[in-house]
Length: 311
DNA sequence: CGACAATGTGTAA
DNA sequence: TACACCTTGTCGA
Image (cartoon, rainbow, N blue to C red):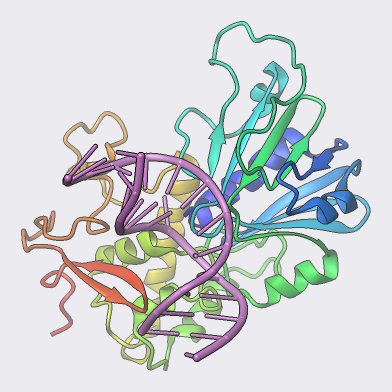
């Protein structure tokens, strides 16, 4: 469910609250028992994300690789020190739930994580907090070489723009990732709507950002890549980087601008946060034409047939 | 309380 | 293109 912005927030959260400490790693559900044994008792060095993939690097050269897929989620909790270090603030969304006590209230001493509820694939427990993973598509203990191979299958991530965290792209060259994306789009017969969902073309974009960026750029979703100029493709990258960076900051996907909000003094409710995503049949916020919906490559595609007409 | 969709991907047909 | 994966929220009966 989460798109790339959520995974980058999770990486930051793991780095904040667990890096540098030894972790008890277990699989209450049992499906990850062998992998948990390979990680149990080792120290987390750092956490990073590329696209929708999360990598937790341990000191002995093993990596916990997690992809949340359609409905995976992490739950976090811990004592006051854990919560003080936590970078996931008040607004929490799918994929990053924090379930400790109330904020600002006297917290009880940390007595260890609660009894696992439901199908907890993996539990990480540190000195001050814990994290439970459920429902992930991928949860594997792999080597650093295997982690590098995963990165090699992914395209550039707009949240590594321009400085990548841990990617195959060169450091310190502005716009390298942007130019890489442009080259992966130009000349293609594939519709731009499909290209934006292809993690080899751009890593981290999902169905919401796909629809919203195409609207913001007023692009017909079915235009093939080869119908775009380098300038237009570059603007897609820049806008994606901008709205996804906002998503990292806000913990939500908000692609509308304050001019479209009924209350401009605070972030908008969900009903005002998107231009077209899940607004099928409702009037376009710009021109009033009903938002269209089509099944496209097994995913719902939303767009305004007037604003995004290429004719 | 059951059916169904959901911010996703891999594999088989 | 279809389905499996395997969890949660929403909606209707």
